[in-house]
Image (cartoon, rainbow, N blue to C red; front, side, top):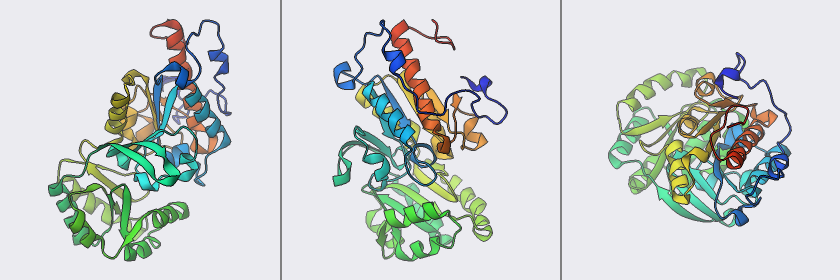
Length: 341
């Protein structure tokens, strides 16, 4: 389905709601490639999924349909990874406990990792793009000027001052988001002092503005000053924040770096997300998917708009992508919309 096939809301109008079963495609007599990745010898494709609002439901759990879809895709030779704004040390165990999560792109594309055993903290860094010192100093200067609650990712861990953790509870954030931030960040006595000690090591700076009427007044003021710095990627990854990385540290650059590292052709990359910080990877992927719960600005940029995260939208999109790649292998060339050469 293409952009022209969507109704006025931008949501797909066809498709089943259960997790796709790819066995019908794979069992065709003409399909010659083995089913499993270890037999296939390489990855057929890369499926990069945002976590919050995409892989996860609103209650931060993974649906049975989503677990089935990702497992079937892995068994068919596809690499399924989280591509997230979170630091590597703050990924949800709901996703990372699944078998076969062998790689991850974190901090909005600033870092990529090979996952050996996530629960025990065993992972290897593949690439890292830090925020340049000059730009980071200017960002922190703005944060000091407006007394903004600021989060620094260093060494794959988010760091937040203890007093900021208390203030965040008053900023109107949804309960689940507030709980995640409070539980996943290491507390430091003073963030600005911590920054001075680690200013050459920063992967990402996150500014928590909040969504109360009073806090919202700060947003355009801060945004204007941040945009004057240059040499940065500045996006919103959810409710009431700014997420700041180096200019070439975006989710799109992150997933293509990983694909190049693993020898996965770019025409076999799918990316799926629901927020502004997912736009770059949706544009960069051969098959860019927006969730049904994404804002219009994200849906309009996608090749395909699926259902919401509450209705297993990512699972549905995985099924469409996997079948597309397998049909291309079967036919040996480009496909029309109905799968014919």
